[in-house]
Length: 122
Image (cartoon, rainbow, N blue to C red; front, top):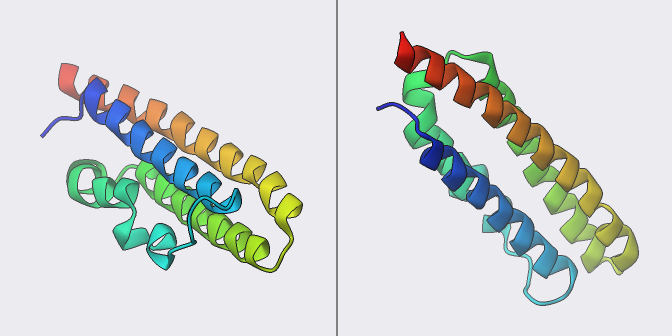
């Protein structure tokens, strides 16, 4: 199965969903659930495992996306713990780190998308 623009758009939406859920934790709208930070339960992680890894798993972008995703989930877990300890402003300020990690993943998506288009044309 070849990856399409729609696949990458859906992946970006999954990433935004994580950030939105994390933000809602850090603003007291919802409780932090460990499932939010679990790689196997993360929609983006599931997409990587089911859709990307079977065809593109050998490419360095995929490995790096997985690493940065794990960092982003760990950062989110740390920020939620910080919030729970009452360090609310510090936790919210840490969202910048999550945004930077998300931007890195997006850049890697773009590289992988170019690679997928190149392999489709070949």
